[in-house]
Image (tube, rainbow, N blue to C red; front, side, top):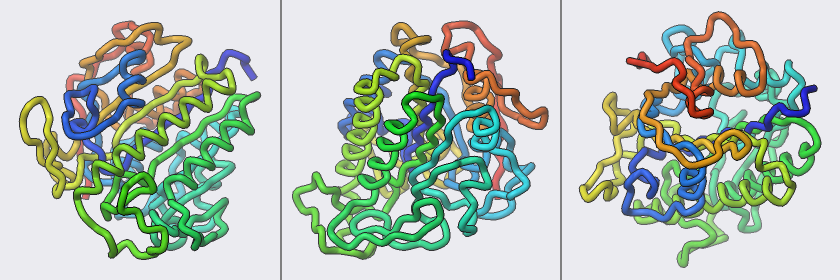
Length: 337
């Protein structure tokens, strides 16, 4: 295995639009850890994905447009090849943690190339936040002592990184946050460790708390990479999976901005994209090139020296990360049913 191959950590936040990040012009929330990544990395102004969860995840993981492989919500065809399969085949240690929603089989994550998994909504759909139900490598585990799902998932991420620090690893981290129901986090003054229902304490006011907690989790991942001395050669990618929930109105560049999840306009598809890779990205930059959710697989593979299948629709933006011109997109294709 080549010693200089980067580790890859791909963090995708659930229902989190472009307007929510302070570095992008957001004014409603605190995102200091993401902002620091943007200040020293590449902040993309024009990343567009699909307006709903499963369509984006299918495109992201396969590098292929939904018209080729999207059958229904909550399914990823087992005939598909994902970036997990490709990275595992190239000798990377592979892990996934967070939200699955791509098939109910116990072995789904492993089938798609992830050796280790800690997931919500794999074979079942229990609560995801306070006192959640998760599945570790397909084995259900329920928590009843006030545990918080996103913290447990982040603990798995930190442990995975620590255990594989001496080898090349790929961690795909599709976060549970900041999807509704909007409930208190452990940092909220009204957090109740006894609830076990997603029907309680629901209020859009908690979206700000959930955003802050998401940012805190990102900060913990970055600090772990620093502590282990592997931050420089880790390609860290942060993005959203679709626009913010329509019940959330934020302040963005001095104006009200209504979330557009599910809408086929920019409020539904425009998401934050920040990339940090200190060994390659030496100073902060802002990139205006268009990026599609199909482009992540070829970009990650190019960075890792992994051959990309011929049937992939995406275009690598690795040259842009290096400060080069690259292959600019003039358009992207949105199709989902």
